[in-house]
Image (cartoon, rainbow, N blue to C red):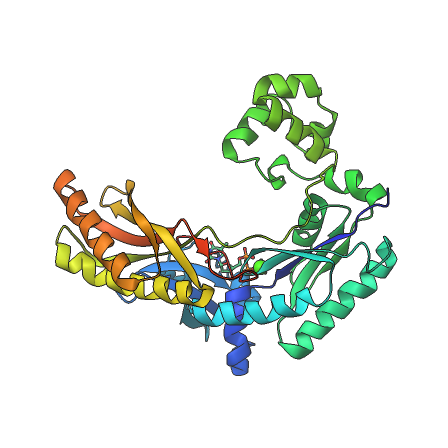
Length: 365
Ligand code: TTP
Ligand code: CA
C-alpha cells in the first residue's frame, strides 16, 4: 500500500491576524483579541494575540487586565472578538482548500487536515511544493498566513505543524516519524493530559520515545485496552485515522456572562434573547431544524449545570427557542438558590434540510 501524505494547516495567530487583515496599519504593533465579559471595561480574557504581543508574554486565556499590564508603555491595540468576521475569513480559506485535496477535514475555525496523497503521488518532495503553492495562493487571495505540517498521518502532521509557527512548513517523512516524535514530551500526544502525564512520569515515561519503548501489555493493564493501545501506537507514529469531512456540527450554542450575578428571570432572559439571536442566525445559515433546546448555567460558585427539553416535532422557529429557554430557566430557578453568573443557549438534534450544507463547528465559548 502506498504511504499517505497528510497535511495539517493551522492559521497563524488567527483572530489577531484577521484584525490585522482589516487594519493593516496595526501590523507592527502588539495586537490582542479578547472576550470581554462586560462587567467592567477590563474584565475578560485574552483569546489570542499577535506574535509581537507574545514577546511581552501575553498568552491565550490570560485576564485582559494582566495583558494590559504586560503591554504597558507600548502602542498595543485591543480588540473584542468578532466571530462573524473570523468565520467569514475561515470559510473563504476552507473553500479554497476544497479546490485542492482529495479530502479535507476541518477541525476548527483555523485548522484543517488535507489528504493530498493522490495529488503528490505519495511523494513528500512534491508535498513540499504543493504546500508552498497552497500557502502562496491563500496569501494572495485572502491575505492570511498559516503553518503546515506534513506527515504520513494526522498525528504526525499535527505535531509537525506545531513545531514551527508562524508561517512554518515542516515535513516529516514516514521513515523519520518515530525519531521526530521520540524526544518530545508525552503530553504532546492528544489524550495525554495532566493526570495521565503524572501517571506516566511515575512509570518512568517522560518522552514519546520512552512511551514507544514501553511494554505494551503493561500499558494496557494501566490504561485499559483501547487507551493503552492508542498510546502505544501513537508513540510509534502509527495512526490510521482517515481524513474525513466532518458532518454538520452537532449543536449550535452561545454563552455569555451576565452583567451581574442574579436570580432575576427577566434579567437573565434579556441576555439569553441576545444569545438566541446568534444561535438562530447560525441555524438559518445552515438551514437546519432542531429537536433539542438546552440551557447552560455557571453559578457563582463556578459550578455549571445544563437543562434540556426535547421537542415533539423538529422546529426551525426562533420563538420555540425563546419559549423553551424561558421555561427551562423558570424551572431551574425553582430548583436552585444560587445566583447565576453565566448563561448559555444551545440547540441540537438537527435534521438536515438539504444535503451538502456545512459550516463550522461552534462550541460553547
Ligand atoms: P490557536 O490555533 O491555538 O492559536 P492561534 O491561531 O491564535 O495562534 P497560533 O496557531 O499561531 O499559535 O487558536 C485558534 C484561535 O482560537 C485563536 O486565534 C483564538 C481562539 N482561541 C481562544 O479563543 N482561546 C484560547 O484559549 C485559544 C488557545 C484560542
Ligand atoms: Ca492557529
